[in-house]
Image (tube, rainbow, N blue to C red; front, side, top):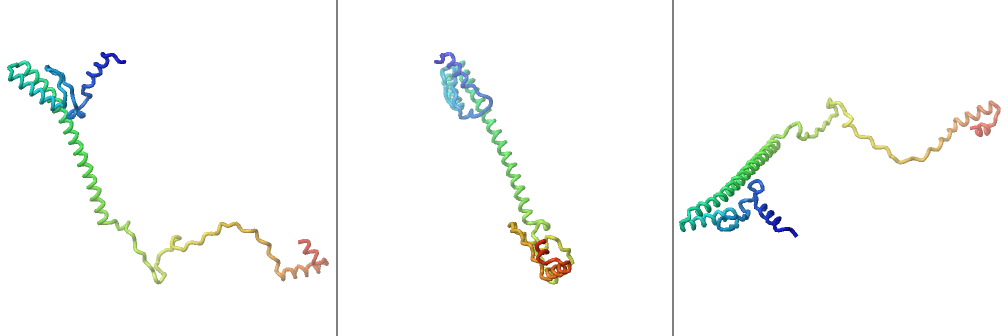
Length: 189
């Protein structure tokens, strides 16, 4: 269990303003004034201390009146600073939004200008058909019809061609002249 001393220390640290306006306008504060604690947003605390200052003035206590007014002034300064920071952030966001909008407007105008006045070099060209075939232009590979792609199927090996009858007769006559039988020459082949 924590000691009461560490708890009270952490409670007092909780109300410190952590650098900047942040959400001071709507933040709830605990103010320890001369008459006890006052709790609320800065505007509520200002109103409460102003009321206490009026009551003290009516009762004739000038010291208490001044004390309550000083407490009210403290929260009034905090609130004013927070509102200045909020306004500065709002103005910065407005300036950025105006810049973004101006950039979008420029891009839109450039697109419309380009659509209204297209570049003739990038415009699609009409197809021209030459009826006589002699246009004086050089024929390029792109204008020639494309060859059909070769089949990628594997083929069976070819059978050797049979010798023509005239060659067989010549071979037979030479073998007779040599004195050998035609069957022997065929067997040799």
